[in-house]
Image 1 (tube, rainbow, N blue to C red):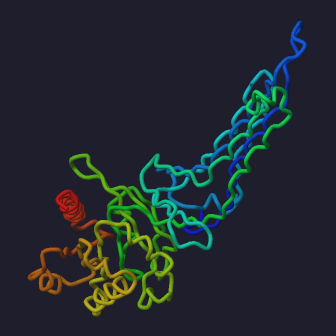
Image 2 (image 1 turned 120 degrees about the vertical axis):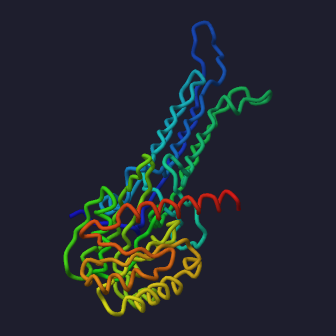
Length: 334
């Protein structure tokens, strides 16, 4: 199984500029030809570019050093050297870029095709034709190219998804993701089956769609680094709607909801103001009387479901879509 990677360090270096050329015209019948050395070519830039087909930084575990091409030397006849090719490095949407040892963010890349130059290529050196003056008709001087920049970058991925599924292990998040979307997560009846976030695309009846992410491994104390949750809590910060998934067959499901919200609030208090819905999963495990008692007085944003049996999946899609539409309107109004 391919490993999910959401934090890595890479070394990047842009191309150096090519050296300028010292050259003089040597044409027939022109005994005192003037200087004609051209400038060196510009070094290539290093560019990070978002590719929607990527959802992990795994590619950077095998390759960590990236160099753009150097510019070529200038030539006689006032010919400028060829510029070095830019190096474009593809990253997934949601990639945050920092320089090693610095807190400031260089870029926060979210949209497909969005790009940032992280290392600018060096300028080419001047050829000797640039140094010709009235008092120096035959300059033998040319500049070396300016060296390229080099940096060590920290890449941190925060998944970009419309909806985030949160819940304790074995609440049925992976089963729900598979029931709602095109994702095929690993599903089993033991804790921490999901060891990395899974993304899926949910289609609505009117041919619209939205993305949904299963955030794994949140347990009590996750915001303090316990379990797997701390490793993946960062991915919740991007979602527009939080979907709490609770195992209704467990007697402590209400306290589980309170604990989940406490962990999210401890990690980032703004998450508690995020639009939300609550799903009481595994309703098929209850007796008819117990189910009727729970469903008799449900709050507006709470639904009873069975992800395994496919019960109420359309209602979940409709409710999530409505919440997403509400957040769009609030953003437009704000």
